[in-house]
Structure formats: C-alpha cells, structure tokens
Length: 255
Image (cartoon, rainbow, N blue to C red):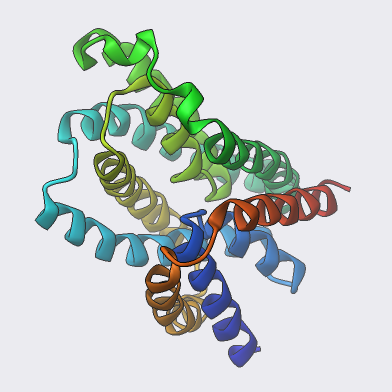
C-alpha cells in the first residue's frame, strides 16, 4: 500500500508538472477507490496540497507574479465559505452519520465540473480572452470576485477539489492577467485556501499523515520531471485524456 501510494504520487506529480492539471482531481477519487474513507481522502489531499503549493508560492513570490489584491478579494470569500462547508459536513456526520455518502456523491458532481473547466481552458483559452469583463478595473469587480471566492471556496472545503482549476477558469475569463501572473495568483490563493481547510480537517481527525508523506515522496520528483518535459510534449491531448479519466471516476463515485 505504501509503495503503491508513492507510485501514485509519482504519476500524479508527473502529470501535474507536464500538463498543469490539478492533482486533487486525480488523487482524491483514486484514494476513495482504493478503500480510503471519503472524509480522510479529502482531508489528506488538502494537507498534501498545502505542502506542494507552498513551494509554488515561494517561486512566484520571488518572480513577483502574484496579484495580491485579487488574491485578497478571492480569499475574503473563499476561506469563510470553506469553513462553513466543513462545519456543515461535521454537522451532518453528528446528526445523521452520512458524511461519507455526502462527500462521495458531492465529489462526483464536482469532478464533472472540474473536468469541464479543464476542457474549456484547454480549447477555448484564446477565444475567451480578451472580453469586456477583463477591461473593467478590479475594484469594480470586488463584489463579484468575493462571490466567486465564496462559491468555489465552499466546493473546495467540501471536496478538496477546484482550488486550482475552477479559480483559474474564473480568473482567465474575468481578469486581465499575464499567463505567469494568473498561475502565480491562482497558486497563492489556493495555498491560503487549502491550508485553512486542511487545518480544519486535521483538527477533526480527517487526515492520514502517513498517506501525506507517501504522496509527497512520489509527487515531488514527479512534478520536477514533468515540468522539465512540459515544453517538449503536446499537452492538449493529455489534458483531454485526463479530463476523460476524471469524468469516468466521477461517474463511478456517483453510481
């Protein structure tokens, strides 16, 4: 099991480095399918995500590719919303003992949403930009930005999925950012969000730290190798294939 999880981390890390597709959408459903409780899979993935995103934040901080105002507005909505989502899960577990069932089915529907977001970003990036929304200053979109943070933050707190793909799609459509700034802001905000959500899940006992360690052992070299090869491998077919795999995983979780 330990070797298998490390190898899974290696494969997922490699795909993330190669294509930029979020690891949570790959790791969380696989953990559930190999027998990990949904609540443990979600909490473990959030903590694992927080550690991996820390390295990305450090790099983008040095490169000055983080839009702190946008990150702040998103966090104002997303962090309280994630806290509410996790609190609701704990309430349902205490009152009805059906937390695992809710997470599993919720995860399936969100995976379909995430796969759709990946496909839109892959095939319609240049068609989406530029548009009239991007021309408006961020101050005029403050309320909308906080609302987006609240909606997607709830999803992340509930399922651990979407901190990268869903927010990245919203930023791509609504804000005028350079490619590196979009990625840097997305990673920095995701780090804040998954760290808070991960701490709450850890406090509730929903984190398997051995799993976190094994995933990191595999994923860190995987990301490095994948990132090195990313400029030499066509990523569009791979992203399409990964999205298809995610949708199949979602259907299995829902059924």
